[in-house]
Amino acid sequence: MRDYYRLDGCVVVVDAEYGEENLDEYPVAAEQVALADLILLNKMDLVDPSRVDRLQRRLQRMNPVAQIIRTEYCATDLHGLLNVRLFESVPAAAKMRETDPDQDGRETVDRIRSVVLTERRPLDKDRVNLWIKDLFMTRGYKILRGKGFLNFSGSEYRYVFQSVRRTFHSQADRLWQPDEPRESVIVLIGEGLEDQTVLQQSFSACVA
Image (cartoon, rainbow, N blue to C red; front, side, top):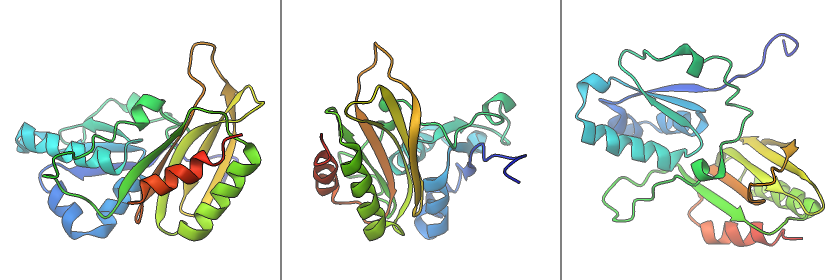
């Protein structure tokens, strides 16, 4: 099968009319959002724009790496759905940081959330490998998805990081471009990630 097919991306349809209720009532709905590479926010014609904006902010807090397309009857350009390689690709750092935190506390805080870990100093590859193994040994079943890229000391290559549940890997992606900042950014999506400060400290401990 692997010789003929590849996973291009996980597409999830969110009902704009009842999306918030479904997220509140059904844990599986939140898990589907967490695993998505592309979200079709559908039934735009039935919902007030302010309500859709609130739902989209909620989805972005849960999964900042997924693309969101607003649709009616799920109609959209197929070029945005097919052969897009979203599963294996990593968004730009600015996109991964777009978590839009609920600073005033008035919107829903979900069981599943995302955290963004960043480090601008070069990392030690062996330390990062140990950090990843420990992270997934202790929290693997709670972390549904992970994406990011890594800047290793002594390497001219950007490494991409991917994880689904306890399956994870990283590999050289491309050379760093002369005009881009060399940094490491990882997004983790799952449960029990309220201790972002502790996670950030452990990630920063991997500095070379």
